[in-house]
Length: 266
Image (cartoon, rainbow, N blue to C red; front, side):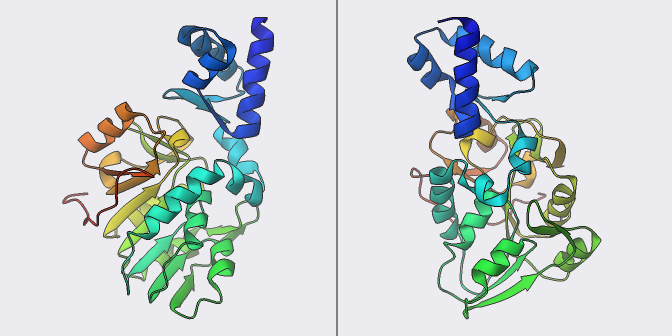
């Protein structure tokens, strides 16, 4: 197979599945890991994908620009597992914040039947939870973004200040041990940045394709994160590097969750 043919097939996989792993491509094409790394590097230079630790993903701006139903469907199984585990971290009568990321949107479907106050900037979450009589549901309001079906801006930030929030469940476009947590959308990033300053626990929900990736706006250091819930495909090296900075890493389908308070000084 010609190099261009192989790279075309790799790109098709990335575009249709959202992510690829080096180990799978090595097996599929019968070439060395170094050859696959060169292919991914060449495609990244063309702006067609973003390399991650052990693989590659679709460029994050493309993910964000997808309509919400399509964005939610990327890595759907992993997101559902992550949301199921994250729901176990919630206790009755907590006040929690749910952001508008696609993985956190899935968490709304798994909220346990218990009294909770849910603060959110996500229109889709408001619609999903509207008939839950056991919840007090608060929408931040703000400037509406049709693409993400969410609210950002000064009004959303101000509304989030008025509640004593126990746990903020946040998604990321990228999470790197050195660069921290990143979002492609500046407005979303600023809102998360403000939230992190005042909540008791920061819980990041991110499938393994987000780990080691890069995005446009950095909104938090790794040390600001209390818990990371990801899937079992996460690189053991990256997991160890997050844990070395004090993050409790829960692998959905692997390690059982355990409640933990906010790190001192975080």
